[in-house]
Amino acid sequence: MTAQPRQNLTETEYLERERVSAIKHKYYAGEIFAMSEASEAHNLIASNVNASLYAQLRGRGCRIYPSDMRIKVVQTGLYTYPDISIVCGKSEFTDMARRDTLINPTIIIEILSPPTERYDRGVKFHNYRTIVTLQEYVLIAQNTYHIERYARYETHAWMLTEATGIDSSIALDSIQCVLSLADAYELVEFPPASPFADRAAADAE
Image (cartoon, rainbow, N blue to C red):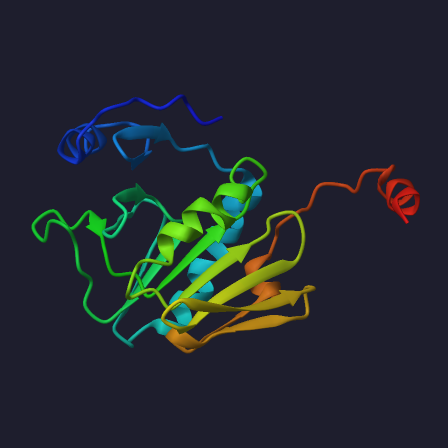
């Protein structure tokens, strides 16, 4: 569960606290929010995707950062921790000595969960779209075989591509990789379907 926000902190105060905190927090407009704990499925997907993309990117000058890497959206002031951030080229940070707050991701990957899905699709993506280096935003479901890829094709326009089913894959053009759903969901066990799901669907027709 996300904790209630702490208000009226400056960015400097937030970073001072965050760098010694045992848990991670988002920061926006003077408020901090504790990050939710991740499920087993979330952690497996993150590890699988990291491994698959690392194997394809190795030796190409791209860096893959897991969820411990904080990013700052410079245009809006949001500080947050994407599940996976990738930079192809030179990584840039708010503090080049500490190198703990990234500002120039090429691609951001988030793994959806019920408490955060609406935020990941809405406010967070609105903030991410202002990052001038960001070329792709990827959303991965954790309860079904489904990946969405939003790619920037004009300054203010994004195009959606989807992949559904374990035999499908999705191309990540900005980093010249292909992510197969079989790799992304390896060993992930989905919760059993509700026995009332079919009946509810029939009633809705």
